[in-house]
Amino acid sequence: MRSRFLAAVVALCGVALVSTGCTAVSVREVPVVTVTADATVSLGELPVLANAKDYSGLVRAALPTSGLFTPSSRPQQVLPASVVSHDLSGDFATTVLSTERVIAMDISGSIAATVAGLGFVDSLVARDISTTFDEVAELPLITSNAHTVNSEAILALRPDLILTDGSIGPIDVVLQLREAGIPVVFLDTDASVEGVAELARQTAAAFGAAAAGDTLALELSAAIDAKISEIAAIVPAGERLRMMFLYLRGTSGIYYLFGQESGSDVLITALGGVDVAAEIGLEGMRPMTDEAMVAANPDLILVMTDGLESVGGVSGLLEARPAVALTEAGKNQRFVEMADGEILSFGPRTVTVLDALARAIYAPTTGS
Image (cartoon, rainbow, N blue to C red; front, side, top):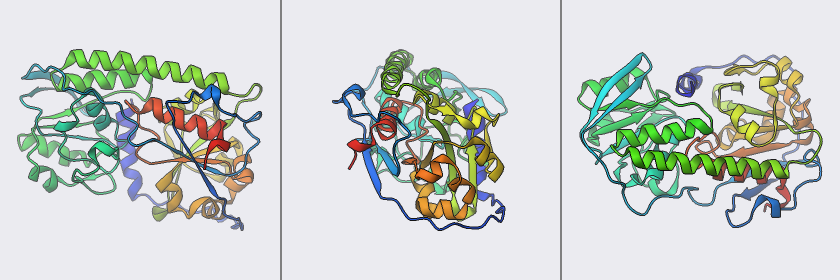
């Protein structure tokens, strides 16, 4: 399940990988083209590439403002609410008395976005480093180092509810907040269209607003399915693009491949691509090896913006990891980047994320 996988990602910040010792290569830096999602222009109206492989360069996929559509009024609530917290150690019965001061935290910013999508954005009193949408930009941060919880900062905010999925930690610190008297509800969903709907339902249940959760779940499922169909219609006939998601943290020497059950597989499939990490049997996240990269030989590599910056951009990545330069993606410097807090966010922004990525992949000439 996704929260179990994401909990393991937190450990990446403290892991350093050993270089294989390949000879570095000299690579020129490519210009960055930015393509932004646009709800007013359908994908079918775009000048898509006749062959998706016929493009060289780095494209940044961006969201217009927050990429969120929030209700104008707060849904009706019934409190106290009795809910099940899906703790990593097992289910735990929890009673929520108030939702006036809420902290929603996870590694992808999906929970806070779902809170906003339900109409409860005014309840949020803080944000984690991955929660970057405009409506909460001014809220104080409660992650002190990458995805590490600052318990003192949380206690000072006097929250009456904490929502998480276990991907922000250490878990012991989060459980200590519960011991301090703060209701903590762990949500558990998959990185999928069904998971987006379930996240809406579980989040709404914690707010005592089950009906709003059902409504949002149906709306999001229909919108995502429609966007996936729209993308399928513009995928060039013939061989699909072979795609890979590469997780980078150059300051720690981290180069990881994301495979099945990581969320990237769902993303790539929705974008009409072939997930080459899954094709070679990679599950979850694995350290990138030269052998795996060359065997996978992706046509296009998806990366997080900050991650790519941490390795010195495209040229820095190809110089540090020559095996990447040997792939079709490396030869053409065919990379698509997106903000860290957006690209794997499964929630109310999923439709806009897919739209932006599809434009960046299939219609990069529309960028600036």
